[in-house]
Image (tube, one colour):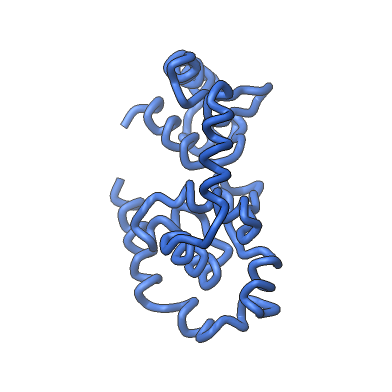
Amino acid sequence: MNLLSKLESILFVASKPLTIVQLAKALDTSKEHISEALDTLVMKYNRDDSGIHILREAESVQMATNPENLSAIEGFIKDEVSGELTKAQLETLTVIAYRSPITRADLEQIRGVNCSVILRNLMMRGLVDQYDSSEEILPTYVLTMDALAALGISEIADLPQFAELSQHEHIAHALSKEEDSDTVE
């Protein structure tokens, strides 16, 4: 797989600005190669007819939506965060509750589907927080105090069958499949 494709994928899953140094380290290449690839992505995406743009500020870069689409995005988000939680949101919230802190990649490995929109909606509802690590590219997710209060518990360990379910063998097996596939490449 080429550098451009890998860089594009990392920017897509990161959900936060990344530095060129972080990207170069993650892709085991030079800052110059990253900058050249970013220039190519900017030419590919930063057009009026593209819904995706690459944002660059000094040494930071992030994949984001086209600023021209703000009103459409706001309308969609308003509809998405009102009302009851969907089944997918409840499943995601449950996995985060029992396995936090958890990365989006691990969450998606367990659930078997992309969780970016669900995570964003849960964060907008104030049920999930995202934490960045200086050592890791991917952020981790945890329940908020508001989520704990809504569940009527004071700490995660108060969840039903927490000790058993947080270390369940099926989850460990699903996560080990991801590690196996990482070592094969």
